[in-house]
Image 1 (cartoon, helix red, strand yellow):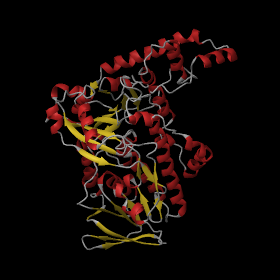
Image 2 (tube, helix red, strand yellow):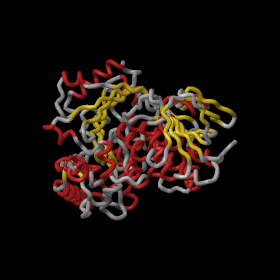
Image 3 (cartoon, rainbow, N blue to C red):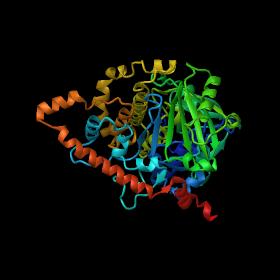
Image 4 (cartoon, rainbow, N blue to C red):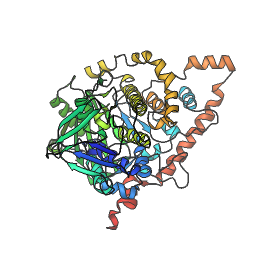
Length: 539
């Protein structure tokens, strides 16, 4: 088998293809990199919410400053995800913030809030994130701060912020302003036939009459997965049992001037509905909205009507009328939750939707592109790609997909809703039984795997412990401190929480008040972006 990787072909464009192209040309400028995309195939272009790792990817890996990047992609800053009605209808919502937590008391961490909540049961669930993550006060006031004076403890503006962006403008920017100017070759043609042999893909026959051959193929062909799934017939792992949503309706909505300061929020808002959940993702010029649902429980037409009712409700700032929502353009996007058993087979490595997709809930779509291509770049430093690299990358992708599958399913498993057949069934499933079957592999080999790859920043790939904690607290699924635990601890070490509870409450409340007052002095996300990024008032 020819393991030389001097000639690399990316099949498929869109966000995945051009992110891969931009990354490869950045770290391997001496290799020949070609991207083939069909002008006949539309890009999905739905995903607009990202994780904080996207800012690291853009600013650090690609070296593009926000002042250049955001205006090109219609972007704004994002610093949290807010979940509403997932626990139960009317739950008031709760935030899953970016950034590192701040622990006021030495030697203690999350348990201090549990003590506060136990002795002061009127403490709302929303207080948890406010206690440990200073920038939540910014998110709740729709503000942005560079934290130049350190008034928000542990908050790093350059690292603890993600983006909302226009997906179609994003890939066009990478294509036209980054990848092609740096030397990526572009072929606008459709792949008609994939010729395979015992070594993998031998050649591609294009509709422009060309037959082309390369050393390494990156499959970015989207859900069709024409190289890995169709040509090499790799096994697909269906995870719809855990994540049943399989379709989405999406539509952009305009800002209304009188509501713009309410509509432009520096966080993604997710609202659970009867057959799924809806997202609200503001960018600079408009708002991206969508409804992710399962057609097992509703028809497409019923789901669209439910989506329209949501857009007209007080869940969405803007007071849209029936006439307005009926005239919005709606796009239906079918998808299937799952991933291929192996992503790197012979001379084909699938990245993005062609490798797998879970669901849009945490904005991980682009994370599942940046992480594998950056890992691939490391292996391309070797003279040849061998089975060693394939196995490590396959194992990495398995843990990404499987770990995020468990995490995302917790939003459903912990719910207490029973107001529709969708929620009745989804909350009665056995979610983690399969974990027992792979417990040894999960616990025993995870650290060895990362030591072998030479990584220790696992939290950048998988949801870290804090992520699970935010979800379990927001959904009231945590049982770390109640009277049974307090009675035992008092008996074992004579810890009298009733003595320290007031100190904990006063300290945490003081932190929240200090951060909230500091946030009041900062700029609204619109005013900050207008002043430092878009500068429209100066035009």
